[in-house]
Image (cartoon, rainbow, N blue to C red; front, side):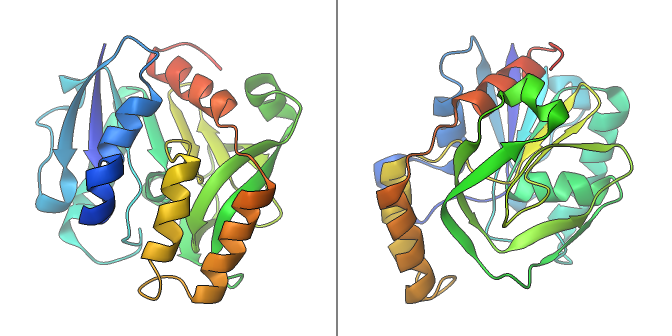
Length: 235
């Protein structure tokens, strides 16, 4: 199966040398599945010609906000709606999670709660327990923007105290997660200090680093769900 990665952002050049781009980390996350990959850097205006160029699509994280008035973001929203209409599998991670919600009628804002960084614990909903299991799922997070109003079709699969719409499903072909299942603990330990002060305050970064010391993320339930959706299997 061929999976298209719509790269909406990447890590700093220094971290890319050590860990690779967001797209490459996404490929590594899915290395146990029999997928091939093609990447489009949508920030540069690179877009597929048709939604069926790939068997499934993934939108990565980004330092940009879904609500910014940028041409490539508007074009990506149009592509999301076309993928949805064609019922091709689609995955959204962090920014991708937010932009899919926005493109399908939801609302994304900069949250009053500020930044969430480090490890967050998501409690599966009743529907989510069949997908993610009944136990809380700990995942790596770096975000301030949040979905605050859901599209009509969105179904909540998991939520946290910080992020009430943390994992969403739209029918059987769209699955999105606010957190970063593709980020390793080692990457997080390097990333948080690296984005001070451009994005995080030193206090925010320290808070995130402490949570990484106390809690271990386990993205396996989310990765398994992503693979199932991309393969066209029901959750």
